[in-house]
Structure formats: structure tokens, C-alpha cells
Image (tube, rainbow, N blue to C red; front, side, top):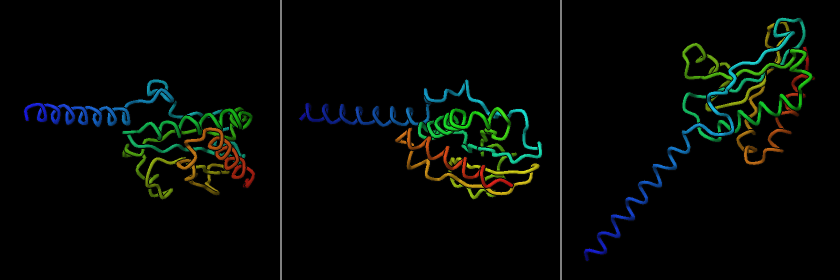
Length: 164
């Protein structure tokens, strides 16, 4: 009977440690986008008030971020910087990372009908918003980096082509 009690205790400790490990892995910074090297905003010559159509790609997140959220941010940024590098150079494409938990940014949740971390593309002309799209499919595609990046790049080009 004593051996059965010891085995039960050992299994419970194992399960507890395993659950704690999984929780820590979910909230710990991911090697995909280490928190120390995060860029909160990228803007380039031309900018939002240049008279041209400007596409702003916003990645909205909360203070606590899981590995999947960090992957979405990293893949999206890479897709835009690599696939649309000319637009970045010209300043017609801007990347911004926004923490929705900061009081100054709370309005974005209502403005873009956000319920979770999101990638939102906003087309502006002379600073005035003309169109926007929440790329909700990124959550379904995050497991396939190639399809994910193709989707983000294609949606960005569509919104850019919509123009003024």
C-alpha cells in the first residue's frame, strides 16, 4: 500500500511540474521575436502625410503574449519587409506595433473591432483613413510560414492598390 501511495504522489508531482513548464513556455519570450530587439514602430521617408496613399500595418497585442502571438508578429513583419521592401523604402508602407493594454492605445480595440492580438492594415491618404482590414486568417495560417507570408503580402498589395 505504501508503494502505491508513493507512486501516486510521484505522478501528481510530475503532472504539476509538466503543467507549470507548459505555462512558462507559453508566456516566456519566444526566440522568434526576442523582447529586447522588438521594434515598436518603423517609418520611412514619405510617411503618412506625404500626399500619397500610405498603408500602415498595425500589429496589436497585449502585454502578456504567447509564442503564437509573437510568431504572428514576426512572420507578418518579415512578409512585409521582404515582400514589399520598395514600399518600405518609399515610405508608402509603415509598420507599427501597438500594445492595447496601454491606456493611450485602448481606442484601437473599438476602432478596429479587436477581440485579440491582430494584424490590421490601414490605407490612408494625407493622414485620412480610407479603408482598413483585419487579417484574421493569420491565426489559421501561423502553422505554415510560407502560406502565412503569402497571405499577408497579397492582402497588403490589394489594399495598397485600392489607393485613394
